[in-house]
Image 1: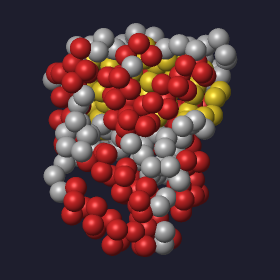
Image 2: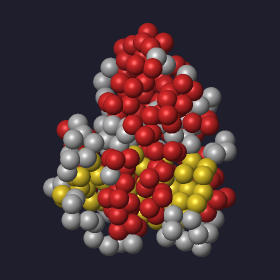
Image 3: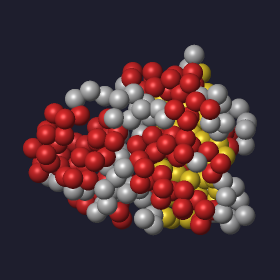
Image 4: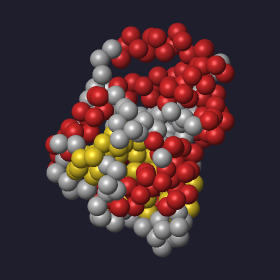
Length: 257
């Protein structure tokens, strides 16, 4: 599967691959990429089941295989990887399967423990899916996810392209996620982030990453929600640039111990 990918920045600059969250697509990285594309080669694909690939069925295995091919063809070698939510989980699978293709990594809001009740939740999704395309529900979901008003049009477009089967596949993969065993020996320096306003479980998951990966650190971003790359892009871009350069992260971040 070939992934549609927006590429910007100098061809000779260090490449960074940005992986979006579930239910949205590559546009969610626009404000961060705008702040980094003068110094880095930014690769922003749409993952299967999202955006321009809404007709495809998402799986971590399929996404990782397509990403590995994208890295080889578009970057010609290792890239740094940044992922949020579902994109963060995908980044972890990519590191576990192809550590030689990843230089350094930043993941934010990663769920790393499986959640119970996938079966009943899938039934509920099928029953309620007809409401998902109603304007009032689109706006409610955007507010719940922390999508700023200026990105509502992009969020609406992605939502209207989503199928019930596609959404079900994304949710099932997300809820069943477990840390791949290969991560425990992966040498990739990893920065695990969680917003201070996110669920406590995601803070626990960030701490899990710092404890289980040999080259990982975890930080809380005070006051940040799940999609803080959209409403705090200056800080997000500064964090990415610092980690890629192996420099101290901005002082706003609080270490998780």
